[in-house]
Image (cartoon, rainbow, N blue to C red; front, side):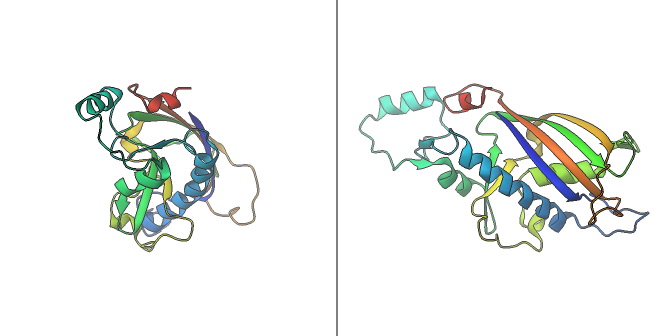
Length: 223
């Protein structure tokens, strides 16, 4: 399954910038970017033939085909609960305070994600490695692609806005990213809002979601 996400706007470094003396705005800033991806991923779920229509019983969903078969043999007369769409019951498993997150790439689904990112910014091409580390703005981006892990990551955004229940995310955890490829280039487009801001960026993110094991569910992700 291939998904293309975009982002245009400020992309601050995770850590305080000693030159700009900019305070650490990580939590609210990350969540503001997360909101942008939420809207795009919601449209993806609504338009994907599998994600928008597949129904299952919540207690059986994470079972493999062998476990389902054994359960049916052991108790063939067991009454099933009503089948629900994925977006109805999966978010209940990813609650953080008042939020119910709906990550696409989940550990239980045996999925991993490869990311190809075109990173347009004010800087010249290259210079992505800083002091032996990846540009801290990429770390901010990866945090925004995953669901919040705790209530501290929802600072100043304690309650979801209208249309954010469930809250769609690409990743349950950024450790599910198996490959990261970043191409940098100079942003030539002149935008009045960000033309004098060195943190302004335009990102094109191609996410390739693939199973690391095959079961009854994730064959839908084989492209």
